[in-house]
Structure formats: C-alpha cells, structure tokens
Image 1 (tube, rainbow, N blue to C red):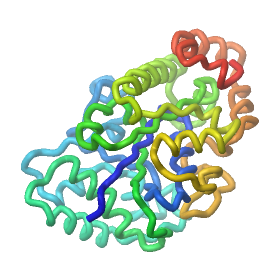
Image 2 (image 1 turned 90 degrees about the vertical axis):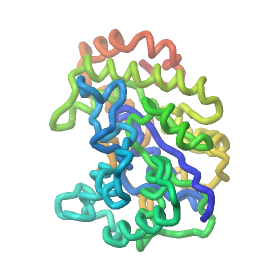
Image 3 (image 1 turned 45 degrees about the horizontal axis):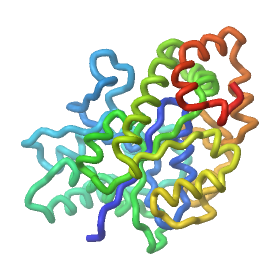
Image 4 (image 1 turned 120 degrees about the horizontal axis):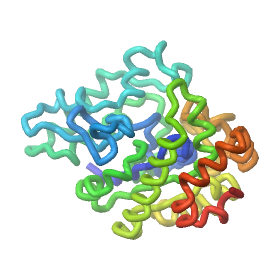
Length: 312
C-alpha cells in the first residue's frame, strides 16, 4: 500500500475552511474529502470542546476505546455530513451534489484495510477512514497521480499535538478571515454565537494557530482568506510549495468532483470567494457591531497585522 500522506484544514466558523477544501478539490494529486471530515468520536475532547462547549464535540480529534472492534470504530466516527448524505440523502444539504457512494462498500473497504494489520492504532483508524472513502467513491475523478489526502475539521488546530503525534509527516492548513465578515456570516445561521463569544473563540483560535506554527515549523501553514480573494494564484502557489504539491490551475477556483462551483454554498455560508463579496459582507454590520468586534479582537488583529490583509 502506498504511503499515507494527510493534510488537514483548520478554521474557525465562517473563515473559509470549506472554501479552501473546495479550492483544492480539482488538484490531480489530492484526494479531497467531499464535506467536513468530522473524525471525532463520543470520547473526543479538547480545551474548547469540553464542559463549556465552545466548539461542537464533532470537531475534536478522535479517541477510541482500547477494546473497540474495527466495525464499531467505523460507526463511532462522527462523520455527520457524509453519513447523513449516504443514509438519508433527502435530508442532506448536499443532496444535489452528485456524489455516488455505497456505504456498505465503504465499510467493507474500511474493514479490509484494518484486517491487513495485527495492531490497530488511532492513526491507522484515521487512515482507513480516509482511504475507504475514496475506494468506495464510485464517480471520483481518479488521476493516477494522487499522493495526498485532504480533510477539513474546524478548528482541528486545537488538536495539533495529537495530529502530529499520529502523522509526523502530515500538514495542517489554518485559514484566517477577518472577524467582521466572519461574524456577519455567522449571524445568518439559525443559532448563531453572540458577538462576544464569536470574537473570544476567534482570538483563541488564531493565537493557538500562531503557537503551533512555531512549534511545528514547515508543517502548520497560516493562510489569510483575504490574500486568496485578492490574488488566488500567488496565494495558492505559495501554499502548494509548502505542501510539496505541484502547481495545478484547478486551485484557482472552487470546485466539486472537478467541476467549477458558481458559488461555494452549501459548503459553508460564504458564497463567493472575492474581495468585493468579503467587504460587502463586513459592511452588513452596524457601526456599533464593527466597533465592538474591533475592541474584542484588537490584540490579535494587531498581532496578525491585519491591516495588510483587510481594511478594518
């Protein structure tokens, strides 16, 4: 079996994490997960998904019982978006996406991969989770050049230590978008965060990303959404070099199954990856909301030198 290389995308809510997933979608060297790859289990937890529930448990890194069986492990993995699509497609927000997959085949592939090993580790379970998905995905455009798997679990940056313990040669992309546009999008959700809570988690997420960027040099890559909106070619080229993945023009626009998406929705609230749309979204806020966000986030905005990336 070929070497398993994993790239995970991290981002706080409405930060363009799903957008980054879709930007990488058509690259012939990348197996890109169709939706959020929620690899957590009921045993998962981290510093912000515990009793305070700042972030849903499904976005934590997985933990498994030492006595768990391979089949039980498959069902223990959250994977809400893909499992919903496979089991009750009429209830999925992706019901018209065109993905063709049989879950029974996926489970069969998952068990077959694990059956080749005497000892089952957490890293191996995660590897089987990704490999089996693409083995069972009937209409995935296989190029024959695939070298990396790409997943997205927001904000998995908080579990970077666990991730790099399991995958020391892996990479993590952390996407940052200004909190004004981010909050303007998040309040369009049915159950949005309050302004203060959104900003608190935005601050904590970016500081954590900066720490891990230093701790795992050349493995954790911070990308500003605004840079991608302003100049996708330069931004994506720099990122692919860091990932040691060759250039391909497909990364200049979001796609699914290699087909250009006219809008990113329903993959997240962000619809159009442009500077104009990003600025227009921030402009939806009231003057007071903007001022409150600047106050709540000012230390981190300064730390990130955000004036370079967006006119705040």
